[in-house]
Image 1 (cartoon, helix red, strand yellow):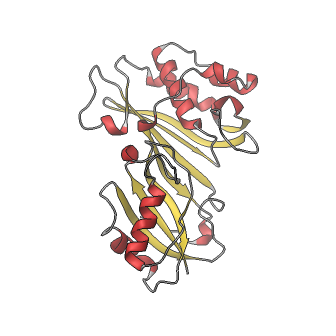
Image 2 (cartoon, rainbow, N blue to C red):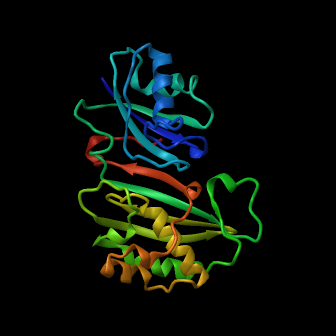
Length: 252
């Protein structure tokens, strides 16, 4: 049967989701746990290839297995073998032709900035510390200009393998919760480092180093240099992956 998992992880100690030769990946960690639980070599396919240091609340991953464990029991089984910074939150059986990545309709990413004079001992692993005050209202106005379907070539880092740089952004917001600022972006797909580039540019808008028209300008120029710095990875979280409701995919 084919099983779909909802996986959360703190990406600090991992080189990303996908197998890498230079360190331990989340994919490798999950496959080792599956082997320990079932005795079967099992390949796991993720919905998103999160980068080194990036976290996930709602990563999705599927695998095929001949093991007799019911799909809904996999969280209980796998969490016995997984480290504390990787947790399986949900398991369900899906059709044999379901694909965690290609069936995804939209994804939501959250980027967190801790905006206070001094970094937090609690949140430093999941946020970018920016000590100078940020104007979140200006940041929120600026990010609204990316909504819709555009060529986001200026929003991609070198090294991406996308066949096209056209993407559709469905929702975006910048919200402050005390010293913590959350940038939320939902789209049908994203380019390599796209959310980190958006977040870095927004921080510069909040500091007054970029004007609020920088996104509109970059969408026209297709020039990466119009958007300033790329925000560091530790503030980024894959929050949710959504599928066609007709498929009956559950949320934790």
